Amino acid sequence: MAILSQAAPGETSLVSLWVLIVYLGFLLGLGVISGRLFRGTSKDYFVASHSIGPFMLFMSIFGTTMTGFALVGSSGKAFGLGIGVYGLMASWSGLIHSAVFFIIGIRLWAFGKRLGFVTQIQFFRERFDSKELGYLLFPILVMLVIPYLLVGVISAMKVVQPITAGMFPETFPHASKALSGGIPPWLSGLVICGVVLFYVFKGGIRSAAFAHTFQTMVFMVTGLIAFLMISNSDKLGGSVASATEFVSQHAGEKLTRGGLGQLHFLTYLFIPLSVAMFPHLFQHWLTAKSAKTFKLTVIAHPICIAIVWVPCVLIGVWASGLHEAGVLKMPLLPDGSPAENTALAMMVKQLVSSELLSGLLMAGILAAIMSSLDSQFMCLGTMFTNDIVVSIAGPNRFSDRQLVSISRWFIVGIVVVSYGLALALQKSSVFDLGIWCFTGFASLFPLVFAALYWKRVTKAGAFASILTTLGVWLYFFYQDIILEVSGKAEYLVAEMMPVTFIFLASTVSLVAVSLATRPPAASTVDRFFPTAE
Amino acid sequence: MSKLIIAAAILLALLHQDFWWWNDVEPIILGMPIGLAYHVLFSLLAGGLWLLAIRYAWPHKLEEWAEGQTQHNVDEDSKTTED
Image (cartoon, rainbow over all chains, first blue to last red; front, side, top):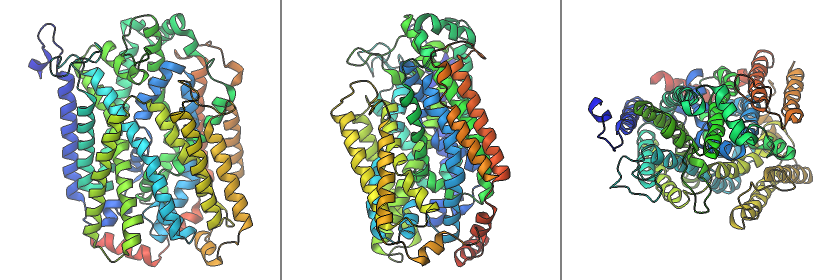
């Protein structure tokens, strides 16, 4: 390592790359170990036999919700919009995520534990006495999870190239000097997908939980180190206060919320409700050993969100000030504007002088990304196996071992598709892609809330809500992404987030159609509203 | 107690909309402009609120129901024991 760190004059040291390689090797080892603990049953592969304790559950859930969106997306968005990004996402999430874990998560866990559900769709099918509901919900959930997967893969691609720039100038030349010689997106995406696939393949959700616990600790510690290193940089004056002072001189508007409307800020409250319908979170909830396991998650989640988001938002704002002052070089998009998604990576590359730390920081960022990708891959495999294969072929058609195998190979297919899509869409905004995914899930919140707390909700109401959500979501998505009616600005409707209207339409259709149709059977109501409560 | 927790959560949600220093940078607290420092405090208060919820509004009956000995849970327990 010492030799590797001493690069020849004019060459870039490979130390940071070696750190990353060692880290990825460690993850592969973790996959092998958790694969040995795998009990061979589908129940163990899908929900770890309900054996996960409080600390691992917290790490799994927190690691899953902190994605490339939280690190790369937040710093990139703060580069363009300023400190308001924290209030838009992080502080709302602190309040609402924990509320959802408390009022939705524990209740769904209880039904999973008592009635034996493995997937979200199984719950909805039983709750509404409808197999067809599952066939409608499955493609919609997959359609919404895939953009979330892409956020992770694209973020990984965006991070590795700038940090490794200059290492291989002849092998990987690039028109932009800030990216030339860096590991290209196709290669970094391939490696990250391959590593995640390996450990998920070996040990299923238990493997993912082990990896989460380890990776969440890694990205939190390295994130704090990155923050300290960057804030101590001479270019920013050597402290957080001087960095803020520097930004006030060069990009003062980024320290206020002048660029944000009041309604825009307010209606972001709907976005964190999405966690109630994330299929990958549902699967993690079911791994909990007991209801008490949730306590640490509910309390610690808001505080840990702050620990991750504050540094990322400040780094994005500082990057903006440095860029305005002509100190920070950023790769440019075809329209000549700076590539916001690379803000975090460019700050690490240009302000952290230690190659070893740069490598650790790169590993930390990728840890956050991978700890979400694995859950998303897992949940898609689980849903396909349980909600489609078993539902169509019957519960006795395949052995337990065959079910695990089907899930594994479906995951391989999803990884291949995600990788291809990420290559095609790598110039998309990570933040905006994530928001559209969250919008869809958040708009299905009325469905899960009513299923758990409203006895009068009916199957027809559930269908109406899902179809309305799909229709209105597609309409707004088409306006924003295909027609680009708002140009580069965030797409708003009457100065509000589109999720406001989709959520409203979903709720109205659910309530109106439920009240207009025959109440559900008493046996169903009795099953899901235990008298003991 | 659950109603008090719900009321506190609604109050906290209302306090999220801090329009009163929308365009202010100062005061700077711990190196952060006020618009950011306030929301960091908000996150800490959210943690405090959920601590109270866990303490005073825990769904004990639901928990007992979930842990009850249904045939499914009996099967689960015997599988775990065998392992």
